[in-house]
Length: 636
Image (cartoon, rainbow, N blue to C red; front, side, top):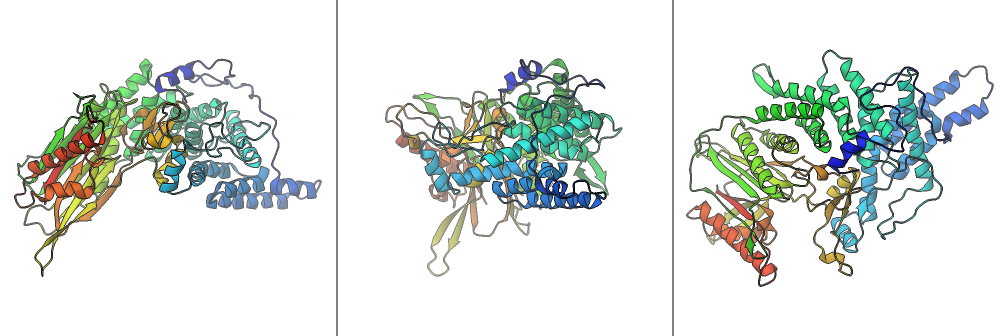
């Protein structure tokens, strides 16, 4: 995978590689079938039946048996719990395997590769940390795109075994040839064009896992060509087809090998048009026409194609403008109250005050019955601008929500929409800049409300903590408990590690000077497998970071909704500048002293002051590094 800027060039000029067609041209009717490696069938039921029934007059039994066995193979591939089960299903099926089974295998394979890589590193967070502390990495097994002799059993850097067995390599190469053959038959009119769902599965797999070398660019190009034909043949494109076409476009862009294609423009224009008419009225209820994930798919695809040519730039502008109009809202009247306050202080580097890349929003609405809070922690050269832009977008979304049981998912949708906008923003370069974020809403704060609820959505390592105070009836003493409402999204966590690897990422520590113990080189980080020096993120989900999105960084927020009790006294939200040096209990300790007066601003200032002291004690005595510190406090 090349960088975002290099990828567009590679799509225009692929030297010394045979090209079946240019991206913007359709093949001629008599186009020659491209050369294939020698196909060596795996055998399976069909081969056995051919040997036993060669020359038989009635072949219907053989055809029926092959069909039945193909269906069994599809079920076996779907039910496979590990790589060995999947390869066994494919090898047993042999030439009788269907294209649907191939798609099932490609859909399952990333997750199985991710799980296998995490299991090799130990499978749990403690084992993964110990594995990475040895200077090893966690990444998916390389997937070959052609037959080769010999089997690599270990990597040169001493990392965990990342190679497939000889039989597994043979099985995947055969699947790859099956994909090639299906696309070739469709191109020459000897079979039907595969479904958009099949094309989407193939494109996402080849784009994210990038089999090879060499990367089979022609597979991605064929998928894009056929998807474009299907869209252009429809007078009205359904939402389902648009979702799948967006996946095809994203897979092509992720590969870094198809920098120019009309499919990007077609999907962009369709998505922009749907955004303009994004809601329909049904029985007086407004509902979303299609998911924000589809919008995000094409935004990420466009971001990976930069720099744009004039046609793609126009299409991207339409998506950008449609996103901007979709995010406009009419803010409700703010209500000032001492119970809600915040403090944000810029950090220091080498003794000098640096740019504060944190941004926050806190405001009451609906006559004080609703509290709205946003915390965004930016990083990278454009981190401050990106954090401020995201804060404004999320604040507008919060103030326009109607509340109810679906509020937490609405927050997650708002975060997804904000990320889609940031990736193609006109003034913010998100290629290597991003942010973690947290958005929450508390309903029912007025006394006339029957119940109070909190809804939270977050990405990365911004954190929310609830302080509970219980008064013992006999002793009259108050006991305090800190309840964490969010779990940090970090690459070293077992589930996140498997997901990142399945998306084509690599997890390892930062590279340090020779002889330095890797355990001293900070937290596990996410890296691109081809661009090995970027992005180096210490979080597994976040806003922005186009290069991070190309190797698994997710914009899908984790959500929760909680009914508050009378014991719930204070809510604290903050950036990692707070929680990297203070425990949840220490943060609560700073706030509980202000519980009687309910002075939120003073409580937030106390938390920030304590965090800055923690940073000073953590670093060198003369010029310690101090992170940006942001804290929002709400007394309930």
